[in-house]
Length: 443
Ligand code: SF4
Image 1 (cartoon, rainbow, N blue to C red):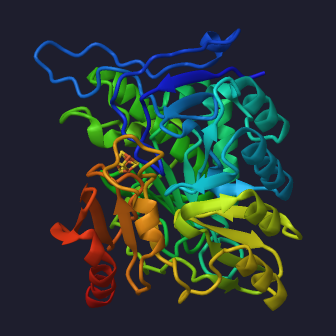
Image 2: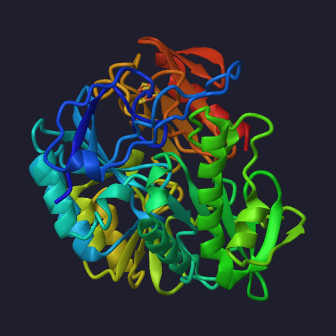
């Protein structure tokens, strides 16, 4: 069974996590883990060349726990955010028995367990494995795949990229070299509606009409047959690893590569026998995230207040659902008949089922007391945020963990009594009024 590494003082910007870059002390290496869990070692830099990273990526995972101020934290990669009902129920049990009773949804549609007890790592790994949530211990941190959550459910889009996500996950886990990707390397799969294409993927696939796909790598757009989309994404990820090794700067993502070390994307596709042609960049229709409520006739979308899914909420969502998909907007698409009774039941559990409900569009980092870096209890202040059309994100420090993409109101603690609202100081006592004005004024 999988092994666990407990990291102290490391984290990541993805979700509700804390600052990365602080010291790391591996505290536990149960039997066999060193062989099974490859690091992402930086290669030596050329003389005179700046080193970007001087250590392997220490992003938390299911087997690499992070010591936060409120206990240990595990980040579970859920490709396309997908959970079967059985897995959702298993996570509810895990959260209650080993953690703080909740699951946090990250800005990549992954899940975090917080407040985990010291020494629970082996038990946690066994429970996740039993639930089918650890298909590859060696690859568990590299399964970072965001896909249009409503793909295949509402008639929009050109292809069901949820199926692409499953195929890409299987291809990643079957490729030993892919285990060397950093825990931050991101694949984004957009079904053509443009809801996730701008989420900062390192390799982005976009479904196009007529059985084609667009491939974006940050240095151009290629059009190729949709049937080749998944092999192309994997080939590009491996091309990045080759370029990173050649650069020797320890880059975790393509955007960190030094000039002159661009991956040979075209060569990688050629070697994979994939025919691709350069085309103009994707022109996104900019479909917004689905509003809370019914989603077509087969599903519904709810938001989790401040991204938290209690065990009770998870069980309510799983009840009668064929599948759940955690979203990058800290919500859940449930594949289940969107009846009024079901929506009422979910609302009774505190889930947001109405776009006008308090809490819609409000996110926050962990803040105090969970993150020692925080200058304020931002979640308490965010819970009192007034409604408004624009998203608002509360951060306990300038790192702004888990902030949304696109346009949003930025609220950052400056000290215990003052926030910066889009850079301007606002006393905490006047914050709600100022946020209300900003969420309306900027829309
Ligand atoms: S206070 Fe918030 S933004 Fe700052 S490191 Fe902690 S979780 Fe991240």
